[in-house]
Image 1 (tube, rainbow, N blue to C red):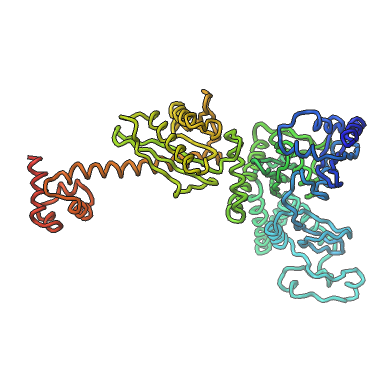
Image 2 (tube, one colour):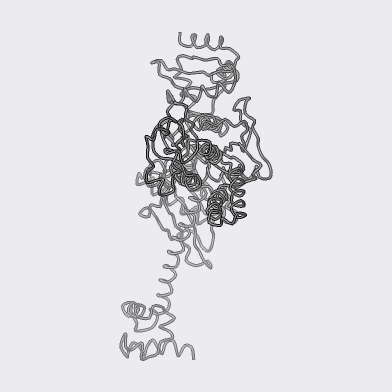
Length: 599
């Protein structure tokens, strides 16, 4: 009955732009989406084989489909965004940022006050923003107060009240922070000129204010009013300094929004830069949690709609790194060269920095989420069937063909588990043979784990190219573990990753976390193996030299090495030095052994 109901709904869907909503059998909303063509988009969920496991799960739960037809794609974008925020459906992207941001208010009153606020009151006042931090607002307010003295009191400065002398100037007037409109010391027209200039500054346009001040400075200088000219020059310096910090691109780029995105397995980060007269007047990044393996294009389109709505942006043009569909009313530009491309690159860098900061915070605040994200990323990057929570890496060490040994290091949840490290003396291989040695240690390691009933790793890494990988695969086949444990090889020179039966290596991004963890494993296995190899060589060297001297035993050798630190220093020591440590008779034996040999 349920399938028939859905089939009927699918057949009767209109081919118009609109928003669709999926509900489960309990009437809970599962998903909200937008479409240029409702029928085509909704039907695609039920007719094609979806790669995403989450989409398949969602489709199984759909019990009812509802839709809203709208007049344009822009309306569909806005409606989708509002419904997602209102209902927060289980399978929709989750917008992580829901703060109330501050605005700069120019109050609707005679002699308007200018102040920062988080509350928007619909009384005809002008609001500019919102700004992403109070730090930015404080900087702007300090700039405005430093250039244009304004009143801060909340008196009702009606014309008749001022004429009747109801108010008296306060301390702010005597400090020079206010020009005293309450006692008619400042005309309304002059005050309004300052408000007009402040409007332009808040919008990022300093040009008019600078021109006006330069002319005033020139006029004062011509009249020999150098003190007044200096005051104006100070204001010009304040404005130019603030503008210099803000201007990063071509001043001809005006009234444009710039968007970019970086993403990983679980999250997308959309950065927004607002440009006015070549200056960045706002920068903000939002975090979006993926629910259905959404593409960067889908995330960016939703992010653009959300940000423009939140910040009340009315610009008609946006710059983005790739084509997006955000409605016919907005011009979408994908820059390729020049200043426009640089500003998109700057936006991308901001998104990356935000992502890095979130990772650092995540490690401290939510280590489990950090680990889950890295494991999911490794699974995707290395094309594994399951997350590599337990990884083991093997390295052979047989420097100059002597004393062949091997090392196995273990990482659990992306971190070294040193108690699980193992070292191996090569037993069955004569001479330096990396391939045979690798086969031996991989076989011995997993035969032991199987015998003891210990858990097997999800991923095995061998240090080397195709040859070492083939040896490791052969060992797993012998134990019947081929296909049960994923195995890869990493070649040192180009950081190539090899898979069994595939002659073409995989190249990971040099900055990817997956490659960094693999390199850590490889380097740690190399370090651990080299340390073991040196210990073994030292032990052999000890046995073949000092202990071969007639009359010298192990205790004497230990005493000598404790004092002289090396066999070489023992060889070079005088008979007096040796005597002070082990007595004259044994010292004579050692001295004569080396020096008669040299003679």
